[in-house]
Amino acid sequence: MKTDRRDAEKLARCYRAGELTPVWVPDAAHEALRDLVRAREAAKKDQLKARHRLGKFLLRQGRRPEGLKAWTKKYLEWIKTHVHFDQPALEVTLADYLEEVDHVAARIVKLEKAIDEAVRLAPPEIRAVIEALQALRGVAQTTAATIVSELGSVSRFQSPRQLMGYSGLVAREHSSGNRVRRGGITKTGNSHLRRVLVEAAWAYQHRPNVTGFLLRRQKNLALSDEVKKIAWKAQQRLHKRYQAFAARDKNKNQIVTALGRELLGFIWAIAVHTEKQQKQLNKIA
Image (tube, rainbow, N blue to C red; front, side, top):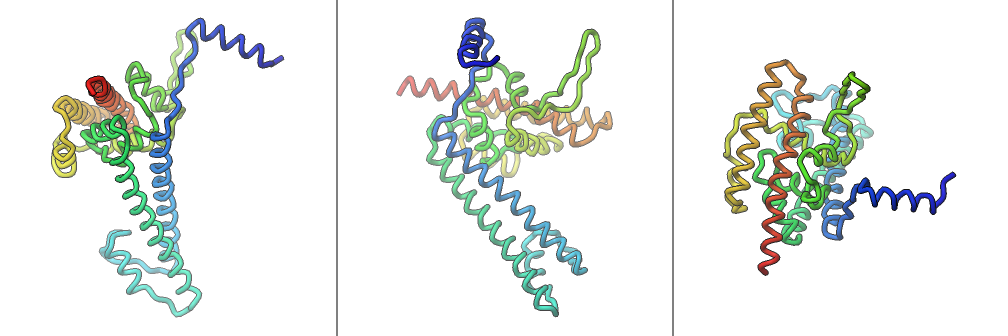
């Protein structure tokens, strides 16, 4: 038997016992940014499909460039200038595939500009966390915006371990009695968040340094010393962990997934620190 009255009584008992987990409802700003970031992600998937169609078409026709890296500007110029067919049907097919590749590329550029504008116009609380997360290696603006829009207020997680469990990057467990059995990651929670975390974690296979795009980001955003200190600690620890796993002949995908889980701990530290600063500034104002 299942009725609203019985459900209400059960919820009331669980609430009194403190066994209910609070949920976060995104506000209008977070939800708008999340939809925009997901639109770009969908466009990237469409780009991959369009490139696969064109690439496989060229392979079927035996057209392969020599010494050109796929999908670079020179590669596309080679297709447009050197690939031609005697049959009109093949020419139309090639033109259609090329048009779709160009169309999706234009979509991505347009959406990335829209993300830049959305971040610039976002409330100070959102913009500050997005900027602070860019101190981390492998976390540029789009990745930072994805993390903030999918997580919302990171301070709602009492510890990094709780955030890691929410992401689904922790091992599933089937234990009973004295037997402990753990398997692959649970994959519960937010798949968009897991994707950007694993992508960012690939950057930590390289030796720790602050150069190039990362150095320019940290200078242009005028990040605090505390945030940069956490980001440097993340580089040192995660690279050391990567080397330790690699020395044990672990699979690279498994290594990067483990690093993505630990990266969440540093993301939690930076976001919580930044959110506290913003609350203090709001009180002063």
